[in-house]
Length: 315
Image (cartoon, rainbow, N blue to C red; front, side, top):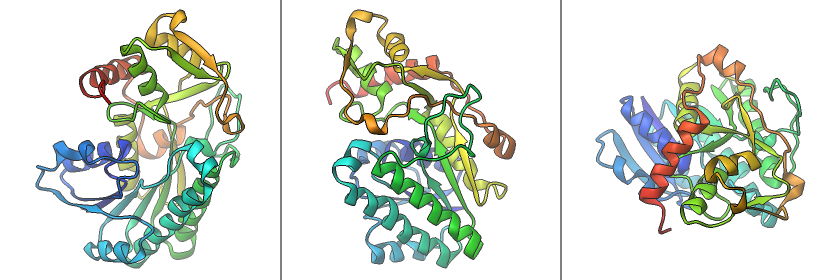
């Protein structure tokens, strides 16, 4: 197939691109490099079926029109503003990227009958303390402009399915981690903790550390995202993916550094957007796609630690 991946030079995007190439599809990558990096896809550029890297912004309607003259079968739409704190400090930029930008891409998908897989987030969910995990029917809560923008994007994408019968699907991966994730600033908690531990630095935990996360290894996430694009059964649906196991941030830090003396609790930078417990129920993905995670948390942390120690120690 002919496939467009917006945000394809980002953390999850590069793994989606890699797998699509391995499965034999012709792939175009669009990214403005606000979050992504060319180094993320450097090893993929020799693949003959990586047709083009397009340096462009999804807010530029004319460029998006031109890009869609290739008439793609699927658009994996991952381009977005992704940081919660950035959305609190500058909600306009997050709205422009995650809502207006999504609309621009969606309109071209409609014109060319291109299926859209829209990358959302588990951050749209309200707090839940249920042991069965959060499924897709759980209530949403826009606790940050980031979450609000993603909910708006989801609703627009699903409206095109109901109004125009455009094949669309909303995917909500839980906390994804692994090689190529940023390990500074508001990067992923796993990669930040690993890098600090390798450097012998203190691991800072926001709040009391009892908040839990369901941590999904990035290659499992990429496989989930791609398979949602392949299946007609999920069209018009919202689908979760996660490990189905949660761990407190305190226990995660201890798992990585194995030393309580290296752990410090600090005031939360955005407590209003904190979700006390994130535990994924991925039954729907299993039923409709046959998907389930293959990489355990311990295995994923080992692999990520090896990658960071070789590639990310000086950044």
